[in-house]
Length: 81
Image 1 (cartoon, one colour):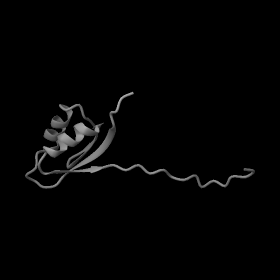
Image 2: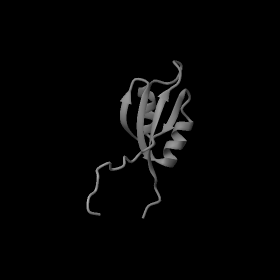
Image 3: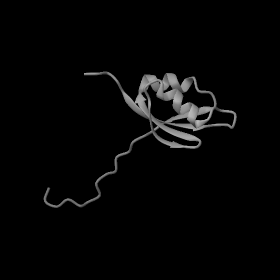
Image 4: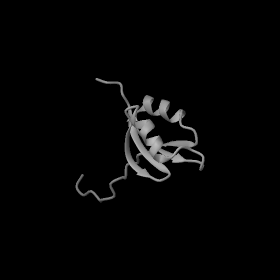
């Protein structure tokens, strides 16, 4: 088994002097990180946790936010259990 942890992170542009979304997209793709969704000032990326951490630390003017997953409880009434 592999110890690789895959995670999704949102990258958001913090200021106008930061690199463009296209430049950031190229930077993360060279490190084996996938771009799942793209907006002019934000990217949703997915990949190895260690690779994402090292890539996002070197990008100035962009801030990273880890995504969270929530489970929705089943609200149906169960009869006979």
